[in-house]
Length: 201
View 1 (cartoon, rainbow, N blue to C red):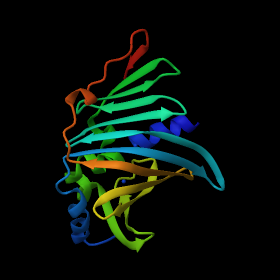
View 2: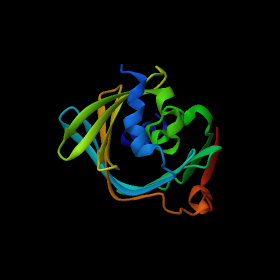
View 3: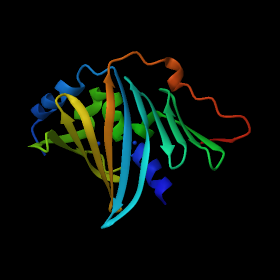
């Protein structure tokens, strides 16, 4: 169940005036690349379901790599045309056209911010705990999440929270964030390991 939620996060891995896109422009407007370590906590009701750790790489527009390292290995790579999903335990790779699969994904909030105003309504929620918070609600009903919250320390993204339509809540805390550094193109090219099943959808 938890892995299905992780997949949902990646595919779902974010009413005010139009001018509220401006405050987010100061964080995302010049974003070319984003690199960070993360910890992810999944909660349902009063139960903490799982903690995971990994690494996130983003290259605008439309490319990202999400590596889950512990407690299991899963890799998601969007190369601009296809989305690759690799599960080490299952020895399986699923390949899908990237297209509209990620159009309303929170990850795409970072990798293609030009569509932010088009796909989301944005509400500034003020500052607390040393962070400035924004609430994003998807305009499309064709998503499996209800809202995304983003928090910034200074101008650096520090937290992403997601609430899905099934009552699960996920929080990603980012550490060692690097902005607009050079990321190798090979990060966004996925080569399936030898011997795994490759399923194309």
